[in-house]
Amino acid sequence: MDALIIAAGFGSRLSELSPSKPLTPIAGIPLLELGARQAKAAGARRVVVVTGHEADRIEAFLPDLSARAGIPVVPERISDWSKPNGYSVMAGAAAIDGDFLLMMADHIFAAPILQGLAGQGGADRGVTLAVDRRIMSPLIDPDDATWVRVDQAGRILAIGKTIPEYDVVDCGAFLATPELPAAIGAAIAAGKSGSLSDGMQWLADRGRAATWDIGDHEIDSWWIDVDDPRAHALAEVETPLRLKAIYS
Image 1 (cartoon, rainbow, N blue to C red):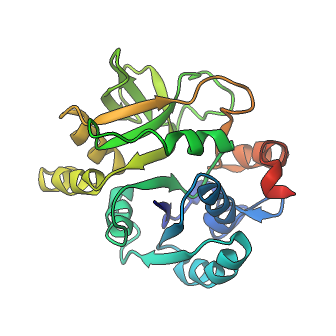
Image 2: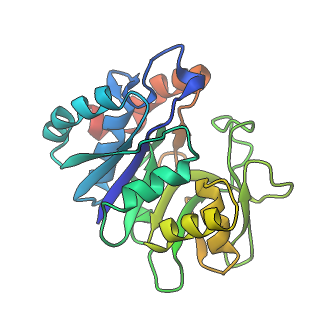
């Protein structure tokens, strides 16, 4: 199984700290390197990185990253990185055969999250999203979070940043099948903007979008979205403690 890391956006909320969000260090290790190492620990055999903003810098970084992490890391450049993130998913998925772990370059996870998610596939779903029921966690930015409403079986009913009712928060990690990029394309054809959430909602409307609850264990279910200076400061302190194997 491959992993797909989305690293194409501008990252405006973190730009005061770094011109390239994926290359922003957390306690000395760039976010993108943390992602590649986490993907390998979850069982990925190759990492595809979708580049856009600062593509030359990021792509030049990948060969050394691959050597350090011990896993092939290859770029897939998107021509217009200003488009919604679903376009990045479609571009990266075109370079992958079969199912894949989908990750955002600015998310960091305790190892059990990705490892557990990787085992959640099944013929009854086109995608499985890692979700957190601790919606009041201080690590979550409510103004930027993607919220999810689920049914009793954990199937997604609605997903988005502005949905009025929700039960859980999107952790930014997915076990995707080829149905997901196809769903994004179908949503675009139907007049949607082309966000990842558009594709997720398209699958949800057809009963093909499942969730996996990461639980509430303090260590095993830790994660953070490093999207602004506040989150960066938290990650600087907590990540080395949570990801000891990567920092050792």
